[in-house]
Amino acid sequence: MDDLTSQEAAVLGIIRDNPFAGQQEIAEMLGLARSTVAAHIVQLMQKGHVLGRGYVMPQPSRAICLGGAVLDRKYHAKQEIVPGTSNPVDSTRSMGGVARNVAENLARLGTQTGFISIVGDDEGGRTLMTYMRERGIDVSQMIISTERPTAEYAAILDPHGDLSLGIADMGIFDLLRPEHLDRVWPHLASASFVFSDCNPPAETLAALITRRRDARFRLAIDAVSTVKAMRLPKDLTGIDLLFMNIDEANAILGLSARETINDALKAAHGLQKAGAREAVVTMGAAGIAVAGIDASASFEAVEAKAIDMTGAGDAMIAGTLHRVIAGDDIHTAARIGALVATLTTESAASVHPELSEAFLQAHMHRLS
Ligand SMILES: Nc1ncnc2c1ncn2[C@@H]1O[C@H](COP(=O)(O)OP(=O)(O)OP(=O)(O)O)[C@@H](O)[C@H]1O
Ligand SMILES: O=c1[nH]cc([C@@H]2O[C@H](CO)[C@@H](O)[C@H]2O)c(=O)[nH]1
Image 1: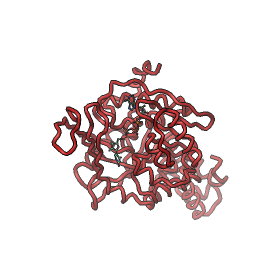
Image 2: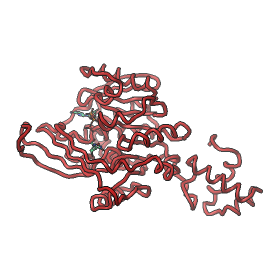
Image 3: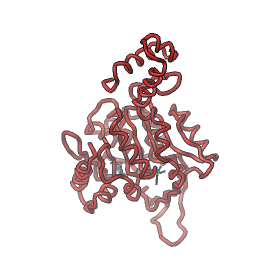
């Protein structure tokens, strides 16, 4: 609360006791002009202490996920893929989008979560919104576009579940402009953590990172892909926690080594040097490198009976954020992230359909 002036704190105190207090009533109680109280309430919204009219108070720990809402289609090859010809596959559909996957994982683990994205005015968009709402995720700040259809992603997976080719129709995310951040700012400002993927345009990411410097929330970012990682500014100052796989980290750092987990550790240090407060660089089954604020370390991935890798990175982020929000340090939290990632590789969907805190606890023995 040390970001508040004494008058703002006094106004907040009255609103907390009586969320229905009118501006005139508050003004009279504090001996201020009504217009002064109105200005203080605007400031309280900007600083994230008040969410909107009716003065609804934010929950103490809340995550907001910003970025991709996507319809995923997976084509799982029955034998080694032969390019340039027809390949037999098993196909499945599920909800995807990095930010959406992170939001669903977080909500399943019990973190209070809001999701901000854009979907088309179509059946896919409506199904996606309903699905999220039914999982207790706040979708009140979503945009519904009549200009573009809901984003789609097709993953062609080899017989081992590894990505052979991904095809992404994500044009709708160009409409996630910086102005939308202004509109949803009270929701972002009141969160304990804001997570964004790199599906929004570079200007929107830059605006978020810049505005984070004066905000109370912590900011986590995931690159999504080597192409989208390039949307991040050169100066990563303002990012509290940056998630990348080794290829994405190398791409933005101009590095190429990807032989051992030490290369991932070097990349994580590189991201810190570029301004990120902490960085997690993943290397699939080969392990995870964590550059924390106090110490750096790497550890092994949790052994998996993997069938589909899609969403593993998103699950790693959600598991990590869930624990960081609960108060764990990044090293402890990332181990839980690795376990959630492994569980996700063992399901055909982009988010494990059975994931819950109890499900996670039942698998904790796998973290030896
Ligand atoms: N074969 C595997 N065995 C065990 N764990 C794995 C395996 N593949 C991925 N993981 C887990 O998932 C995490 C993220 O995987 P990866 O490094 O491939 O990131 P990514 O490319 O962002 O993932 P994706 O794009 O598939 O979501 C790893 O840190 C690891 O914990
Ligand atoms: O450009 C993009 N490609 C793929 C995804 C999503 O990644 C998820 C897997 O990590 C998957 O669900 C896909 O929709 C995205 O959000 N943006």
